Image (cartoon, rainbow, N blue to C red; front, side, top):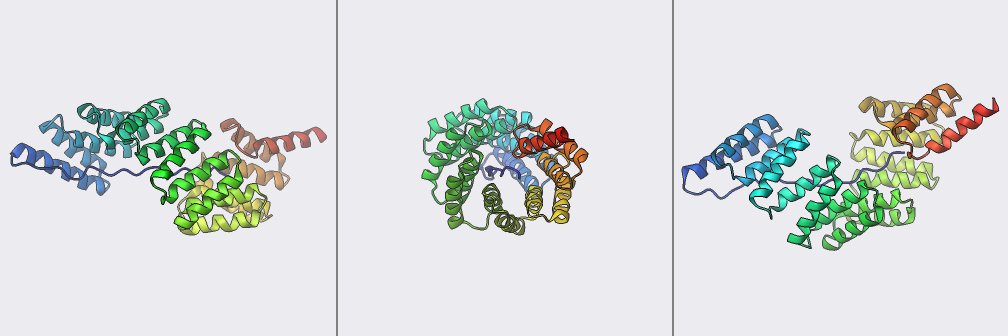
Length: 316
């Protein structure tokens, strides 16, 4: 099993600006729009070059800083992205898109408290900012402050009650807290709003697995894969369910596929250890399970199988 991933926000570029009659305004505006076109085409380097040109004309051009930050964020240059968002905010301290995106960049960089500071600023600007509550939920989840995360997601739901993604994130946190009934309730609500989201079905599979309903877990993850074939951890989860359904060959195929996509997927490494345990190859089982334990000692199922391995060793 692998923990369900939370939804993340998608942010839009600042695509348009008011262009005045002056050539300076016209010129910087053209560079901004050219940069945006390059960014939409996936040419991040080219986009940044155009934003640089716009900023050379107007060093106080907040939209260019913001969009350049977006390009750098997509390059995973988080420090540089945060710097650009900060420049935009220094020019306009109520610039909501930059505050939201900087909070997300701080979260991705592991600066959770800085992310929370930006969220507080957003809520001072507008205490009905649903996206701010959403980001607060993400940050609190990352900090394992699950009650606070649920409260934040609930506040976001009150503002946008028809957003299925919020219910899925709420269900994910309930799952982390082992409150499976609450997770199912949130998933049912999400399904009423939008049953086409693959993460919904993957999380449903995890809840079914925890309840010992392995066939239902398999059916749910198959639906997740049908909706999104590119999520490697869905295959890892399916491999685990197949292990418990005694489809050993199918399980190993899915686990190996997941590892091929991401060799550092320690949930798949753990599952490979479980596979070898079930096949009676205890040396290999011990190797993989201990590798997973070193990466994440709190990973579900690890303590159970480590105990089994130690018990078997003691009996030999």
